[in-house]
Image (cartoon, rainbow, N blue to C red; front, side, top):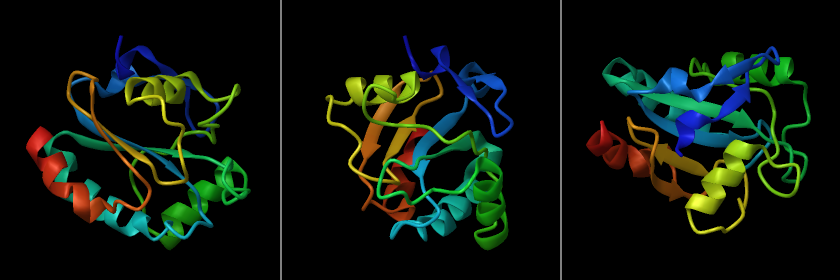
Length: 154
């Protein structure tokens, strides 16, 4: 089993298979629009633009589980991210990353990286081209700090 075995919901609520990203290096991130780490969107977008032509994707999963920092609708979150931060990478429907209602993808990501629950928004998982988890990064780790690792996996 790997990341490509999971289905998620896109912004419109339609089911999408992560197998659509087979052969690409991905960074899966749980995000929020009103978080102290929200400025990381700038670094994420810069990295996405720099490497997307080499097969790099950022998969953005908004999450409202941490101090209600993503309280808007999916549509409004998408608008804020697109207009304020200029993000162009795929954004999915808002999810839960911890607890009994956590999405199966995040249950898998947490289980495969030692079982420690997601501590906050902007936790990142680097995924190789075969759908395997390469490394997990905490919220405080910026996109700039992991760029060399992304480049190495590419």
